[in-house]
Structure formats: C-alpha cells, structure tokens
Image 1 (cartoon, rainbow, N blue to C red):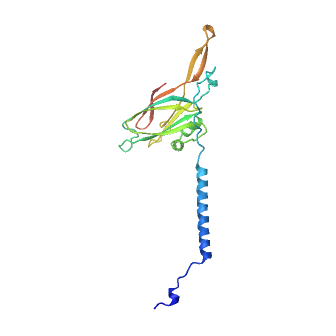
Image 2: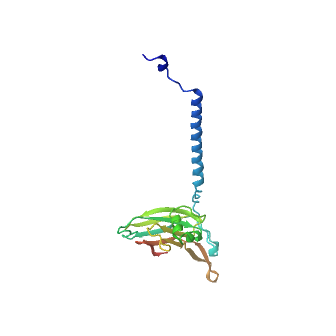
Length: 216
C-alpha cells in the first residue's frame, strides 16, 4: 500500500509560477515591439492619391506647362514575341515595371548597370521622382492594351523588364510625354500656346529585349 508521502503531489510554488508568467509576458511584449519597429523601418511612404481632374491651362512656353493629373492620357500597346524571355529552349513570362516620372535622372542611373536594374524590378518608389508605379506580367505571344491615367507631375514614362539576361540598354526604356502645341490670336497676332499631351506607345517585347514599334 502506497505511503502518504508517495501519494502527496507536489504543487508548484506560487512565487515560481508568477515569475514564469511575468517572464513570458515580457518576452511576448518584446517580440511585438521588435516586429512593430521592423515594420515601421522597412515601410516606405505611400504615394499621394490622385488629385481631381482639372482642365489643363495653356502656357506661353514649354517650361511654364503645368503637368497635372489627366485620365486616360497614356496608352500602351504591348506585343510579346512567342519566344519571349527565351532561356534553355523555352519561353517565359516577363515582369514589366511601369513608372511615371517627373525626371529621368535617377532611373537612367539605375538602368546603367545590372545591380540598378534589379532595384528597378522591385517595382516601387526608388526615388522621389517616381509619381506612379505598377507591375504587370506579360506572357509569350500575348497582346495587351493598357489605358492608364497620367499621374500628377508625370512628364516621363519608363519601363523595366525582368528578362533572364539583364543587359543594360536592352531591358529598360524611357520616353517623354509630348507637348500639345496650339495657336491663339488673330492674323499677325497669333502665338503658340502649350499644354500636356497624351502618349501612345507600341512596344514589342522580344525574346531578349524591349523593342519600340512606334508611338505618338
């Protein structure tokens, strides 16, 4: 027959249990705080929302043109070669990053080397000159028409394509939005006035590079 000492179950001491719970709580709080700090440090400021559309005012010179938001002011006709992104005898999809920029200096600097091109292929706001960005996946042999709004402050369009071979000069392109030129006045008092124009581009995504087919 078991003795009374053998039947006695040892109970945890209250002090030890309280200390264990406190340590677990402190550990959970520390992990939550570290996660919040990491998220805050890695996040980037979001792009501002588009402003309401305003009829563009005509300017007396190209330098005085105000590049405001404009709906449906950008059309991209994307034609992919059946051998798109050919590698080891097979074609593959391509990631296409589309940027609208106020200036092309930062884009061109990154596009000059493979390391910079990889940064462009993150499809994010790599510089303050980026006023809009988005990503698309293009499949071999596809034909796609993209009709996009021109973002507030955008004067240039730029693209970067994620080919297997990231050859500088072959997988990035940039273009300027055109200026629309009109004449105002009567007879000898006519003068040129300028306003933002729309951009239409026809692009061929070839087996190993971006090729321009035409555009306005």
